[in-house]
Image (cartoon, rainbow, N blue to C red; front, side, top):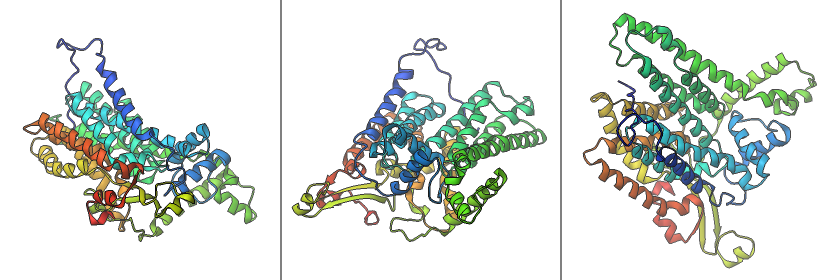
Length: 474
């Protein structure tokens, strides 16, 4: 079956668990705190806006002061509202405009564990996947900068986890003779997954990719293992599809529109409203605002289609999984003591860089795990492997349709599923404990080695060269 239900929780005595043991909450809490410690450490450094923070943090400050961004928006509002909440609480400081994203990245570590618990039989494997996300360079750097991708990743993983919770709730009461209405409606968790998908799309339009993944997973859940005739299975498939339209299209659409509430309320201060007033149309009805909002969405499509594809750190999607072209987002360099006297932030003769580079200890072994997942999915009908593989493909393959290069950090939402893929391959291997320990040790070593270029610590040129393993990384 596509989505296999996990074994029931057992108490230490072997019976059904009545009172949960300490580790049930202590383990995920520890993982959350570890992820947060890495993401919140020296979060105020660099002490200035860098890379795309100059867009997103500035827009978020507009949300705090005006209720809407002053310029033309390039993305939906929700991720910028997450940044704005940090500014509202901690002020216009580097920590303030990054804290919301850091919290989102920390929660993603926890949700990776919870997703792993739904896919694997033992909490240790779920914990290993969460640790790999906590230590990954792309997940880490995207969580320490006021951008949208780590917020998007949080909502994507939340949606997939809720789909798995829905799966387990449906498996508990479903069977071959179950009414079609039950497949149409699903459990309440399916609708909560739709809400999470709406939050994803309201952060970045690429959240639409997760909608495709969720729809495929739910369809597989409802059809697999029922042993129904072709006619009955067809009607059930149609029922699931119709229900999916409501849960995964209409609910996200409603959330998406609701995320623009600030735009409607503060229309006069928006870019579109100011332009309309300058044209002599300061008084607008609600209907006119809706028309303008629709035009704004069309303009957004055109903006992304026209967006230049010549940035030095853009790359083609086929190179993203093997880390062909990471993105340099911060560079501070002092060439002489005179530069230090003039206010340079690092010692003379050193560079401080932040590179959005995934950990080779996770990404490259995950590539080797791909054939294992494919074989397990097709030949062994491994539900966990199929779930992970479908999600990864849905988050990556559609980028080829864009027809132009993008940025490797577009795969930030895929990092938890890369970790889950690697862990699944290790789990079903002949030597799972040995390989699992090796993967953990390798990722710990990689973190120590690459941390300076993930955290912006100053390095000498020779030390920096040691960390640029491929010519395409430069």
